[in-house]
Length: 138
Image (cartoon, rainbow, N blue to C red; front, side):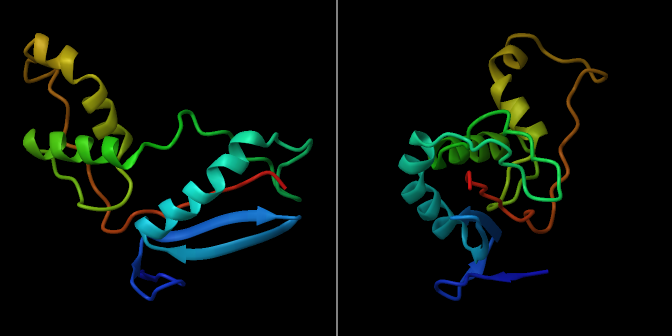
């Protein structure tokens, strides 16, 4: 399945969802346009508070992300490191949690050589990144 950026017609990474004034919106965006949308909304989201019962109507609320989204520089560093390690990783889209965990633990792994049994398996990559989501408080 491929996506077309609703703003400029380029290839899109996926669908970004958000809500404003109790209206939910979805837009297909490229990685760059999705980042720009998040950058524009960041000061408002950062100053906002979650509304009571801010879960979507009829559905259980989504759990909060375990960590903030990585910056572009962090993402580039992780990709560069993974490629240098011989890992298979796509040039765009979401970085798997296995690759990110290996990157975050790279100093520990470098200090002690791993045996064949302890060596991490190469992460599998997807052909297309899953749809991006952004949910703001209503």
